[in-house]
Length: 310
Image: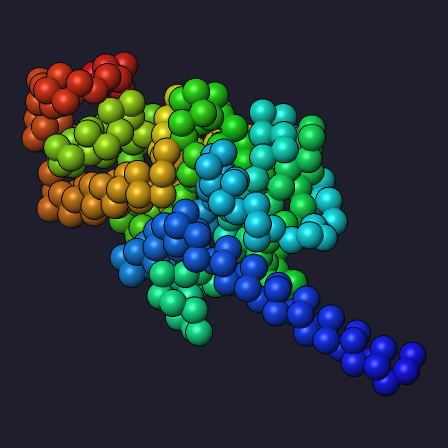
């Protein structure tokens, strides 16, 4: 190759590199990516994400797919098989956090603006035509991969999608200390967990009128945890993972975050009242059934009366 050929090749390489940089920067500034990063940042500031604890995923809707399309990699990564297929999500795109990333680093603090995200801490995966495998189509720079909870997120997104006619799009997992402690002390049933949250403060039933599901202690990132969570997600938008934390879902990042905020505070109230020696009878009387019913009637919410308990 001669001098001019070398120069042309070098110029072409520089242009391609610049194009990739522009595409990356543009993708990280998309509105839904910024909202996702903001959710992670607010959770980290609340103290719910020690070290690499916590993760999140967003199932892109059609408008978000169109926004993301210009920034997706022209040469996607290799297909990786899922342990548990998600046929209802075949061909879909999911924005998710990277394995081992710090949630306080998802929102970029570098050369990009504060409203953008960090391409090393998140990325977009595409599901194949059967929902049996995924591949990287954006982000995960530096050889990073999606969260180890990816399969669990996908099966929960699939279950919540079916339960809400496609409205629920976000899975957000965090480690509020009081919620983890509460999971060790409260009864190991949906009824016990739900009454623990509902009767802590009146805001709780507004956030989760259907209740909160309970998932027993299971290995993080395991297929057992994924399947147990998917089963619970059929009925509940939020669940308490024993000795692990909370998982909240919603139509948007803000909705999932708001549910997490309410439940984290309710768990803190539960723990403080337990330390103060409040009895179960006193706890139940502190927010009577009639109040829970009245709140839901006033706001047009469907209270799950099956979880009121004895």
